Length: 487
Image (cartoon, rainbow, N blue to C red; front, side, top):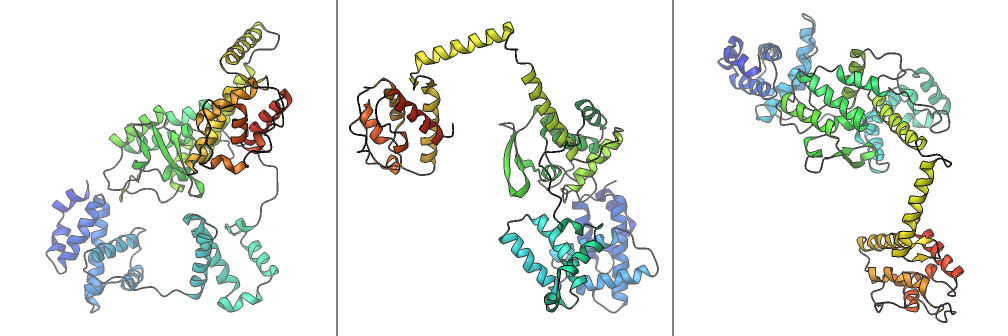
C-alpha cells in the first residue's frame, strides 16, 4: 500500500488535517506521497509530526517558529522516554524542508562556522581550485583534516607553530586502522607487477544467472551487473549514469569517469536489453534522471558507488562465489580485462607457423596485395607505399585546419608528392630558396596544379626537403616525414 492509498483511509491523517495546524499536516503528507513512501513510513512520519506538534505547542511556542534547534531538543526529550527510530531524524528534516518550501516556517539561520571549519573550508577551496580534485575527494580530505586539527591543534590556528613531524607521525600511528593512514605514501613497487583478482567467464555468468529477474530489484541488479561485467565500468561510473547519457540511436553511452573525464563507449546489445527491461518493468516512477534508483522511497539515485559495490557483493554471495581476495564491483572489471587479454593472446597463438602451408599462403597473399598497391600508388624511396604517407599528411593538414589555422596546402598538393619519386635526378639548384617551416600555413603560398617537383619542395616544410634528387635524399624525405607524423 502506497502513501496515497493509506492517506485516503487513515484516521490519523484526518485528525491531523482537521486539527490545529492542519495545513502543516497536509503539506507534509503531500511530500510523503510525492516521494513514493509506503504505508509504514507514512504512518511513522505522521506520528512523529503529531508528537513534535504537541511538544512544541505545549512548551508555549508557535509551530511557525519551528527550526532545527527545536527538533534537536525534541529528540533529546523523546530519547528519555522512548527509543529513537533510525528514520526519525531524517523524517523531521524532511518535514522542515517541506514546510520551508511552502513558506510556512522561516528559512534556516546561517550556522556559525567554527575556527576549525573555516580552516578546513580554505583547504577545500585550495583542493578544488588549484588541484582540481573532484567533490567526493575533497569531502574525504575535509573529514580527515577536521579530525586532525581537533586532536593535534586544540588551540586552533595558534597551535600551528607548535606542530612537529613527531606529532604528525604519532597521530598517524594512533589512527592507523581508521582510515587516516591513507595519507602515508605507499611502498614503491613495479606497476602491473602483480596479477589482479578475476573471475573466469563461467563464474561471471553464474553470478548473472543468479539474479531473480522476475522482481523489480532483480531487474535492477541484473542491469547493474551487466554494466560492470560487459562494459567494465567502475562502481562510481555506474552510479552516475543518467537517462540522458544513453544514445539509443547510435548505440552508445556517455561514461563519467574519474577526474571528471568523459568518454563515449559502444553499448552492447545484451547490456542495452537489460537496461530496457529494467526501465520498462522495474524502475520506479520518479522525476530523478538517474538511470539506477533506490527501490525504497525516496526514489532517487545512489549517493555514491558504495551502493553499486554492495549490489556486487550480494550478487557474489548469492551465487556462492567465495575464496577471492576482493568481493566487489572492481572484480568484474578485472575479469573483463583478463578475458580480453586472453582472447588477444589466443589470436596471436592461432597465427600460422612460418613453415606451415597456411603461413606460405598468407605470405603470398600479403605480397600480392603489396604488388597491387605498388601498381596503383607509386612508392616513396622504393619501399614505403605512398598511400600511407598521403593519408597521414591529409590527417595532419585536417588537424591544423581544425585548430583554426588557415592552410593553403590543398590535398592535391599532397598527392603531388608522387613526383618526388619520378622527378629528375639532377641536383636541385633551388633548395636554398624555400620557405621556413611555418610558411606552410601562410595563405600567400600558391601552387600550380599539377605541381612540379621544385614548387612542391618550396611549399613543403624544411624537414621534408632533400638536398638533391638522388634516391638517398628521397629516403631522407620519407624518414623525416614519417618521424614528423609519428608513423
